[in-house]
Length: 184
Image 1: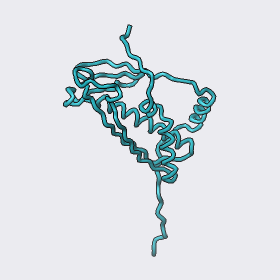
Image 2: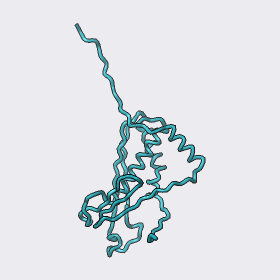
Image 3: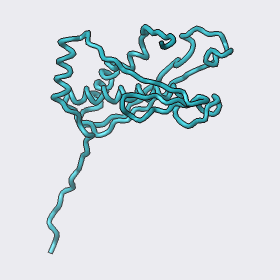
């Protein structure tokens, strides 16, 4: 007796979706009040050497340190790496939002970031005299691995739209007013 013919079944696992209706309501609110702004707040406390704790809302502290060659203990990511992680997170949120808006289900989303950074001024502690635009990130490169139920071209358009509207990417790209002073 022969076995009945069985067909192979492909199983696709989609990433956990966000609330599309909530997203559309949020977008509608933005269209109706494009000048609306929120405020992000962080409280950073230095522990010693270059290790600091940044408190964001009710979350566990974000630990920041410097590598050994920059006189830190290498116990956590460096400040520039934290900035890149914020950019990666913001792009991931944007790509997810745009895909949800376009009704594209994602099965994979990975973002690889690297940036060229220099600090010849030694944080202003006696290094080279430099203008602000000569320090910090000089170039950022981002590569996105994204898969879903859409063509490569459609996925590329989602990535580009998310990049165009990314609050963190635009904060890094565009000059913004910046003030600093002693707390009361």
